[in-house]
Image 1 (cartoon, rainbow, N blue to C red):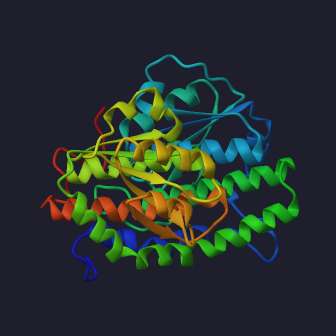
Image 2 (cartoon, rainbow, N blue to C red):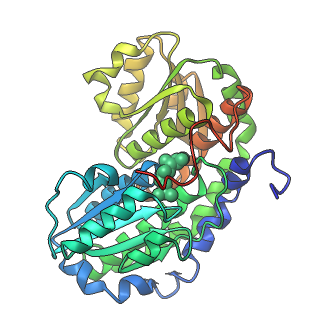
Amino acid sequence: EKGGYDHFMLKEIYEQPEAIRDTYRGRLRVDEGIIKMAGMEDNLEKFLQAERILIAACGTSWHAGLVAEYIFENLARIPVEVEYASEFRYRNPIITEKDVLIVISQSGETADTLAAIKLAKEKGAFVFGVCNVVGSSIAREAHAGAYTHAGPEIGVASTKAFTTQITVLTLMALKLASAQGTISRPELQRYLTEMEAIPAKVEECLVNNDRVRNIAALYQDAPNCLYLGRGYNFPVALEGALKLKEISYIHAEGYPAAEMKHGPIALIDEQMPVVIIATKNGHYDKVVSNIQEIKSRKGKIIAIVMEGDTTVRELADHVIEIPETTEVLSPLITTIPLQLLSYHIAVMRGCNVDQPRNLAKSVTVE
Ligand code: M6R
């Protein structure tokens, strides 16, 4: 059932090219230059008239929501607020009929996310669900939605659910942006073409598996690890840190790289591995100067860079190359080596990768 892989998590990491393709199949019409999503088309006015979009989710799904915030605001120019479902539901938030709430959940059964839907519906908001499990409670409670087509995700650590959530949310943002006229037809066309190229680029990342495993071997005993990224890749840094802590029990934190000097830089010494996303088209020069700051404090740098990068290669202790893509779609690529890194470290530490201690696949208690 693990299809020859040692763990479900590894199998699911390797399923991502297909899962992403399955998720955009039928929706992405590159030749026609359009995106077909029935759940959105039937409710397009609600989205176009929304004063803002609220996003509520938990854990990894919340990270996908953060990526979506960057994409929606940048491309569709609609204000977005991302909330932990557990905070949102209890803090007496302001919700009106002019709001659209997007909930994101792999299982479709997360209790706090379900409660967020009920609250928003009471206040008259329109609720759109992005779920993986067909017919799940959240899918049924939402007014409309779009499924991710990741297939069953068995490993507790979410992998293909995350990348397929980002795929759906990106398509939604592009669809809205083109309906609003905030991106031009040629721009839309370029994104569609690039989206179609993503699965092959994920494959390319997976080819680096041995290299990632060799790096993992060097850091398997680290007590702490820092993950840094900026812009679209700040949420990816959070996700990388969550992945490491939940399956390997190494304390890890994700930060926006520029926040380092407001506190976390005090942690840097020769023992501290810092995983940093340093892709060419995302605030590259700023990230390079963050890397220099870490190096001058003797931190160990593991950098995710684009193929052919030379500047970061000179500064970093290790580099993991990934193929180039447009900045908006880069989280779909930068995530892959971080998943592999946490997987290998957890295996080397003898951890139960698919069923980490204290965790359940779906959190149906509050
Ligand atoms: O099923 P959901 O997407 O609603 O689950 C939300 C979180 O419990 C989930 O993403 C959790 O953080 C994962 N274990 C992360 O790998």
